[in-house]
Length: 471
Image (cartoon, rainbow, N blue to C red; front, top):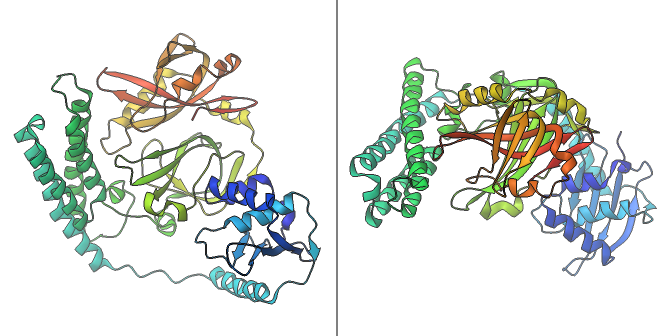
């Protein structure tokens, strides 16, 4: 049975919903707001009282008797764990004395209830009933919505993108808003991106905004066509429930982990290590996304994780952070997708990293990496970039905007992918020059239509002694 001795600074940081919560917890400790610090004799529970803004102190505890730590606090915060629970663990790490005491009655009762729930959940669950009629009704509604999206594309092309004035833009925004009633969020966002990008057009034939709008129109038209074929086929066959197809998410579907496992989209006993991490916002700053890129140390595949947080509720949703160590995952669920599919898991054990294993999986041919990336980028519904891990002999700095990765007689230009990720090329000039030789680079390959070239956006550099994350 685990005890409170598993508490580390890394555990506190990873458990925190966001970095601000850790900062606030440190302030609580520095002000000495905790009273009556106590622990149980078996050291599976620590608890105490924290003086907050209210009249009475908050009762806070950290329970390590189960498979996962459980944090409890009487404060009104909707964040879990709250800053008081994080501060309690920091107090333990600081070496402050905790008096041995009996387990509080309320926590003992909650432990008993948790044990009963665990026993019940261990029993085979009855298969959930699938409402086929509701699923079919939704698909028919989405089919109607596709007609609206198609009319938008046709109208935009027949009228001409440059002739879209403010009145037409407002009309198109209203049309995009209607798509929300047809459960087509992916198509709705693409339409909004197109309309909002029109205002940046300059009239120059080489205008980057025009190229961007054109790529979005192509994506939207392809999504409408493929979605109509997909929905029609499902309705005709009667198989209206979720299946292994990327269009399920494009049409607003949300996968449960249980559904992914039922569809056979999972892998047992996976070992993953994070190659890169960054945050970005969607085009209208309503959603924040934590993006992680991970290497499967067994297969060599590169996966991505996405933690999507609506801005209005972001402080109540745990914010992911950069991760270190090897994650040993009993069941790794994989979404339908191409070269870098999204993955999720419920639990993992973390061990010390072994960076030499990353280097073993790195590609040794730029041409092969470009060929693989091109095949994935051709799919209009895939992400506009492909994550690759490449060996290199040297990275040469060209200027602040670009660098060159060399591998034998081959080379590829490094340039930031400005639309979605930070300018990591800016960081390269501050990296120790020794780390720009004989290592591996993880980056995102993408096609720049304005230059008709494939570029590689650098995200991290790997050597046997560690990973240098550039963003």
